[in-house]
Image 1 (spheres, rainbow, N blue to C red):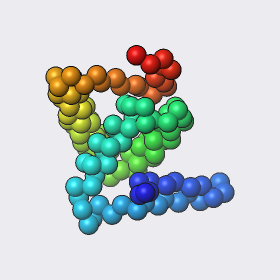
Image 2 (cartoon, rainbow, N blue to C red; image 1 turned 180 degrees about the horizontal axis):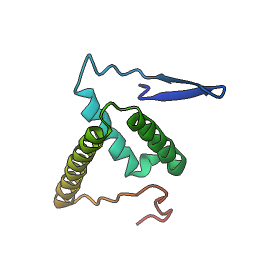
Image 3 (cartoon, rainbow, N blue to C red; image 1 turned 135 degrees about the vertical axis):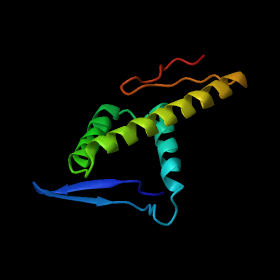
Length: 117
């Protein structure tokens, strides 16, 4: 098991971050993590606490942007990168469907039904 990101708060203002991943040693790890996280966020692997998790991910993103040297450039980069990832995920979904695999994705807060077909 790898720790992608751990954020712990000790007291009111002491927030600490930790990860087992070192992107300086392998830059390919970043796209890999993005793909795995995106997959988990659209499948049954999501876990049921998505609203709280998304709120914290967005809080971290806003905090990061608020201290960014060039906020507008970073927002443009995130926009381009997320559009490319969305396109890649959609293409992968279409390819799986062409091969006969039934693909069901679940957005945050939407849990799969309990009935089996």
